[in-house]
Length: 299
Image (cartoon, rainbow, N blue to C red; front, top):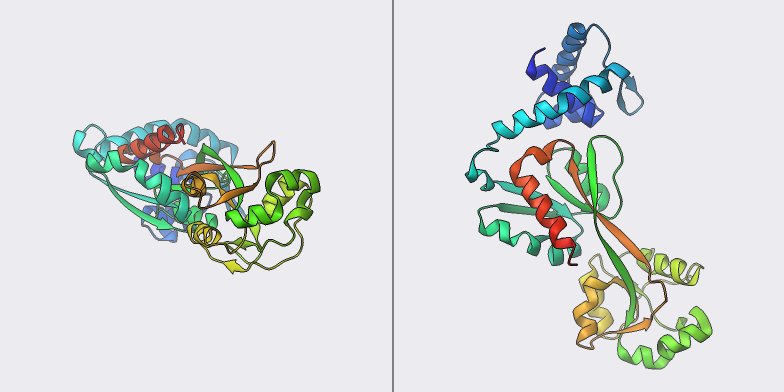
């Protein structure tokens, strides 16, 4: 079988769509369709069935992908310079939430930058990040949920604790953690809320996980689409916010903000490191992937 046809086949199998595979390969959709039909003629059986949201591999298609993927990935690694020590001097395209990417992921990659890796970063929502990763615009994506489907694979990166914080004067006014333990969330009714969206997603998730009830209906006094901006407004005394501990750790240590409540089981969220299937054969992506996982063990 022709290696070019097999490469197109494997890309379609992982992408689940002729259209998406065409974008990844830099080909037109009719060209991809024609190559798959040619391969199916050689194989003597259909490899894909058309579905509502793309194509679905047949049993023969899954079997062929299982057989050829390791070999095609190894050939791609060689073609991209996997045996050349200078291969580290490539560009990595990274995407993720602005705060986590800025405060954790990008600093963790600096040792590779010193060895010649170039990094280009884009911030976006989980949906935007995964769409860009699937379309080939990004090499790695940090996302707060595990992506589904064969095109993308993911590895748990780290867990993050959510902390309910406010300026010290709000802690004094409410009575702090002891009052919340005694009175429940009613002790916090007079504290204004800050968040990254009008729907107060972080505060709502915290409230539901810790107090096992939705928060009272309220509007955020400050809504800013960046957790660092929310933190600075909390420190200035505007109200309370549920923030990842990594965002507010320094502010807690230097006393600019304080903990309003310290539950016995703090709410956690997991970040995942996502990659397109097969691209870890590229040395610069594999090195960055490994570096981020190693750094995350200390976060």
